Amino acid sequence: MFRLSSSHLSILHTGRVPKSKCEEAVKVAIEVGYRHIDGAYLYENEKEIGQAIREKIADGTVKREDIFYTGKLWSTFNTPEMVPSALEKSLKSLQFDYIDLYIIHTPLSLKPGDDLFPVDGNGKLIFDNVDLCATWKAMEACKDAGLVKSIGLSNFNRRQLEMILNKPGLKYKPVCNQVECHPYLNQRKLLEFCKSKNIVLVAFSALGSHRDERWVDQSSPLLLEDPILNALAKKYNRSPALVALRYQLQRGVVVLAKSFTRKHIEDNFKVFDFQLTEEDMKAIDSLNQNLLLGF
Image 1 (cartoon, rainbow, N blue to C red):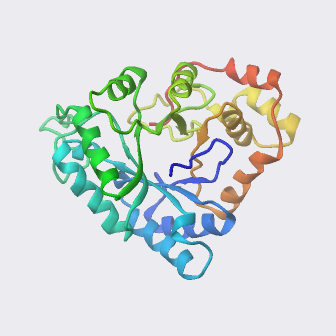
Image 2: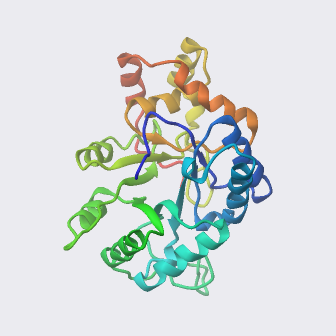
């Protein structure tokens, strides 16, 4: 049963969490009250995540059915024949019998192989030409086999979503689409489309703070220094980060919160202690610049 809800922020995003800190971060998150853990093969920390979850199950804090784990099919495994083996790798690392939600990490397919980012002699990524509708059919087979409870997508635009939704013989439609989303890139049109199709929009980089120099112009503005966010933060006696997170929740967006310290993990729960007015929401809407800050 799919149970992602925009009324819950309790999703720990483990991307970029240092491997050495990941196990402890997951255990702390579960102790604080998080039940949704967002992971991926790409993050190379599923062994640590699985260990942390099993320890909290062993000490009686949670049961396996209390935990909602999201895993992701990496781009070097998009070939339909490779989907089952990719899923098996994650299940083995986690030591789980099933994954709650399994999503295609990106519509871009890369050359199959052991390298996460295969490159040619000039250092350019080597892409692969894969029919994503065939990939989706393989994902559906994983669900039928009981290895995953739900299936979804990540980083898909409207055209790519429609391609899956219009796939002949579609058995299961995507339950979610995980994309970069924050006040400087509010994804309004994509959110409206997803809502019209009953697809949950899940926001990563909700604070626009990753700013990976490989993808992001380092001269672009810092979201958390925005004057409007800071004015609202002062108004509600909250941090600009909490204002940005609250904005998403009130739009019906599920938010991934990346934290690996107890303080930040606990602070994120304060997002439920206040509510933005309609005027506040419009003010934050006005900040949109269609600006990528996080991938």
